[in-house]
Image (cartoon, rainbow, N blue to C red; front, top):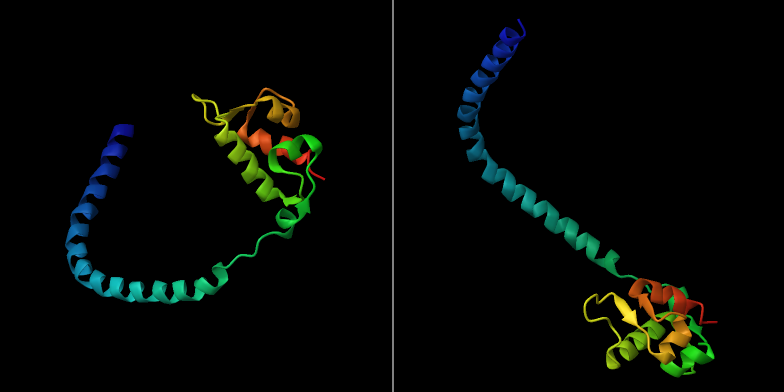
Amino acid sequence: MATAKKAAKKAPAKKPAAKKPAAKKPATKKAPAKKAATKKAPAKKAAAKKPAAKRKPNAAFMKALTPSAALAAIVGSNPLPRTEVTKRIWDYIKKNKLQDAVNRRMINADEKLRSVLGKAKVSMFEMTKLVSSQLK
C-alpha cells in the first residue's frame, strides 16, 4: 500500500509541472517591464545612502599614547596614536624581514622586538595585544 500511495503522489506532481511551462511563456513577456521598473528604484536608494557612508574615526584610536622604553626603540619616543604605532611596527618587521617565510602570519622577533613582545615568535594578531601593554 505504501508504494501505491507514493505512486499516486508522484503522478499528480508531474501533471502540474507540464502545465507550468505553458504559464511561464506569457510571464516572460511581462518580466522585462518589471525589470525596468526595479532598476529605477535601487538607483534612488543608492543616492540616498551616499551621504550616510561617511565615517568618523573612533577617538580612542586617535588618542596619542606614550610608548614604553623598549617600544620607543622601535617606533620612537614621541606619543603616537595606536594606529600609527602598529604601522611603524609593521614597517620595522618588513624592513628587517622578520615575517616567517612559510607562514606569513607569524613574526620571528629579533632582540628589540623580543623585548617588546616577550616571545621569540608571535602571530600578527597576538602582536597587537602584546604591544598594547607597552603603551600608556
